[in-house]
Length: 64
Image (cartoon, rainbow, N blue to C red; front, side):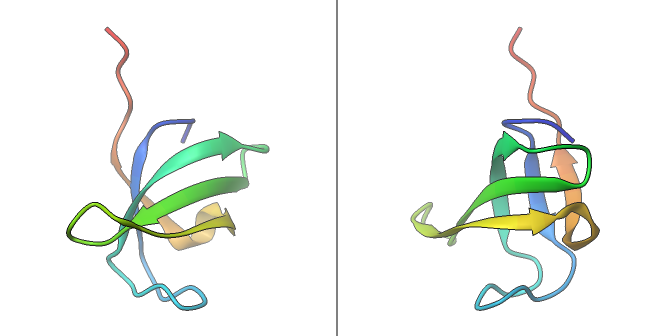
């Protein structure tokens, strides 16, 4: 997983429910990321530092 990839939670994390989608905004290393999570309207719920164990990749970012 890398910056700007789309992800979703595979289990609840803090106040964010399983299945919530987000975008990786910073990659600290191969295990930890800063992710911005969005609601169904596209509004930001929260930006959190999270381990990859909570994330499933939805789509890799393609800058082409």
